[in-house]
Image 1 (cartoon, one colour):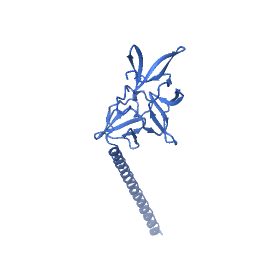
Image 2 (cartoon, one colour):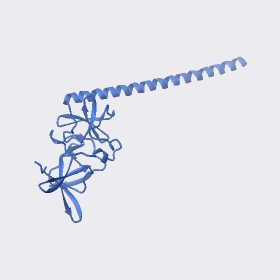
Image 3 (cartoon, one colour):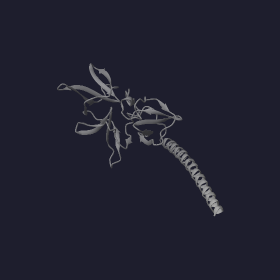
Length: 227
């Protein structure tokens, strides 16, 4: 009986050790497989981005806001966003890589990538932070957006950018607003430009003319007064 008891204890100890070894090996295998999966996902995502960029060519870094013309003044655009991934970024800054969840989007025949409220364009072997490209479709609008209207149309507006539904529930398209849209405030980066004695505000290639509505200043989108 003593021998049997010792044998049982030895078997139990050996089984316990074997289980611990198997569990440790499983943890190591899981960790290695998870890391390999992350690496494979990252490589596949980067390859997909490269293929996407190759299909569209170079995106440039100006945001293609107005058909290849100057995108206008975007001073402090990202600093004015509440999104944690965007606040504090500067337009023109470059990053060596993108977040894995960065979404490829196309605008005016150029490739861009969107993640956390930030837009990037391929620039050599890195990516440049760019203004929101007109024509791009994103899955949802910023939480800070409000509805603005005028000239018989309505848009969603946030921090100097206008959006409208892309159709078929496919997200929202960044658009250039027509003249006559009224907003109550401008981004802090808007600049004052005097043309023929008239003061205008400009931000992101969109021009505004201020006027009083009672005691409140309202801004109305207008055609580019410089031609």
